[in-house]
Image 1 (cartoon, rainbow, N blue to C red):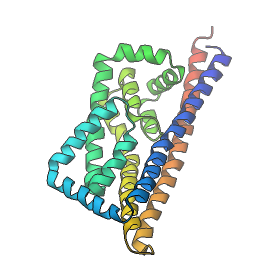
Image 2: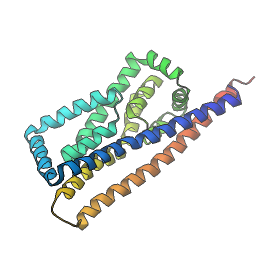
Image 3: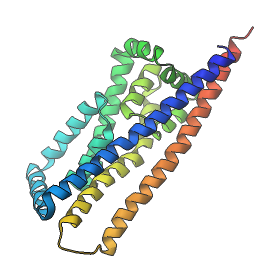
Amino acid sequence: MCSEENIEVVDRVQRFLARAYSRAALPYLVVGLLLIVVIVIAGREIEHHINAIESWITKLGPWGVFAFVGLFVLATSFLLPDTVLCIIAGALFGMFWGVAAVLAGSVLAGAMQFALSHKLLRARIQRTFAARPSLAAIQRAVSRDEFRLQALLRLTPLNPATISYLLGAAGVRFSGFMIAFLALTPNLVIEVYFGHVGKHAARLAGSDARTAHLHDLVIIGGLVVCVAVMVLVSRMARKAVMQAVAVTEKAGQSTIKP
């Protein structure tokens, strides 16, 4: 690979990750707009609707959580953004059960996606990546710096299922894959927290109280801090991934020189 091609591949990866950052913000914007619309339409009745939903979830008992886990595994395996489901989990189940359901669904989905890409879909995925130089370059970097880069990829806004399929097709070890997968946990918790705060904000908007209490401000402020930290960490991870890709492409270039 010549120097110009090397630079072009690295540039493609950079643009690919930049687009992923833009797409990652979309679910938050959509959910925020929907929340505003619901508050405007429902008005003072919104708390009644929230209580009705909570009552329905309570009646479902553990089956509601199990059904959500199954839906999570199926939907994310078809590349539906997990952010949407995490926010829904936080709104429906609260923090404890929301995080539990999302973690269980994520781990099961990741294991299934790894098995599918490693055993059944490997050739098809490799052909797909061959037509996507950015993903192929990331996969080559993973093969060179396996565990570290797996963990870094989980901190970027790339779709977790896409990463799982990529890593399974790359032939990484399953044990390392699952350990690195846990790096996704903070992002999942923050996304669930976003749904929890959204429901709290909707209930606050529909109440008769004219001012927010300190407890309310702490909850909302905590979300702002968490999102800021998540953005900072993901940017650092993206920079590290870009460096790993650049080193891998340079090493590949040097090995083919006479």
